[in-house]
Length: 287
Image 1 (cartoon, rainbow, N blue to C red):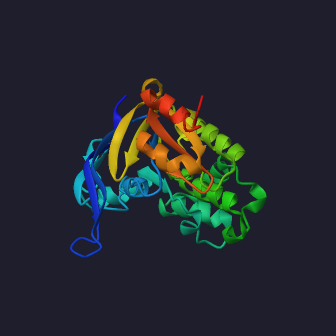
Image 2 (image 1 turned 90 degrees about the horizontal axis):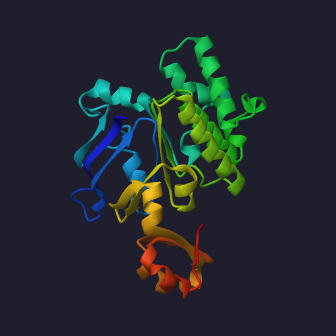
Image 3 (image 1 turned 45 degrees about the vertical axis):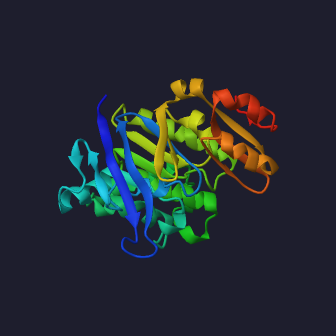
C-alpha cells in the first residue's frame, strides 16, 4: 500500500498575536494508506476537529504540511481546490453543512459543482442516499425538518455523492443511538470494500469503543498532541479501555493516558499495567 495522505510536522495556532492566541495542534505526524480506516481518538478539546479541517484545506497549517498522493495540497490554488473534492469532509454538526431547499438538492450540490451531467448527478444522489440510509421518500423534504440523525445521514450522503478518495468524518456517531452507530461502522467498511483498495476513511471520535469496532489504525490525541498511534491489534496488547462512575474521575484521571467524563460516567485509555489500580476504583475494562 502507499500513503494517500501524509501529515507532516503539522501545527496550528489560532488568533496569533492576540491575547487569545492558542496552539490547537502541535507538531503532528501520521499517514493514511490507501484502503485504511483510521480512527482519531481524543476527548473534547483535544484538537481532533482542528486537525481534520486541515486534511482538505479548510484550514492552513501555521507550520508543517499535508500531502495528498505525495503532493502538498497548498502547492497552488488549483491543487487546493481539487483536494476539496478528493478529500470529502463531513462536519461534526450537520446543520452547518445543509443549506439547500430539499434533501435531493443538498446531496446533489457537490456533484453539480464537479460539472457532471444531470443523469450522473441523479445517479450519484440516489446511490449515495441509499448507501447512507436516507429514505428516498425524504429527498424532496426540507433538510431542516429532519431529525439530528437524519441530518447526519444526509450530510454523509452529500459527501459520498462526490465519490472522494478519502472520506473524513468528524464525530460521525455523536447524534446516533448505539444501534445506528453500529450500522455506521458497517457502512464505513462497505465504503472501503466498494473502493477496492482505492478509498480511505478517517473518522474522529471521543468514544474510545469506536476504536475497536471500526478502525484498523488509531491515532490518540490529547491537548493538541499525538500521544500514541498504531495498529489496533498491537495497541490492544498494550492498552485497556476503561469506564467507571463519574465520582471516581478525579482519582482515575491520573491513571489514564486520555479520557473524558460527564455527570454520571467516565471512560478512557490506560496502560494495561494500571488495570489493578483502576479496578480498585470500580472501573470496568472493555472486552
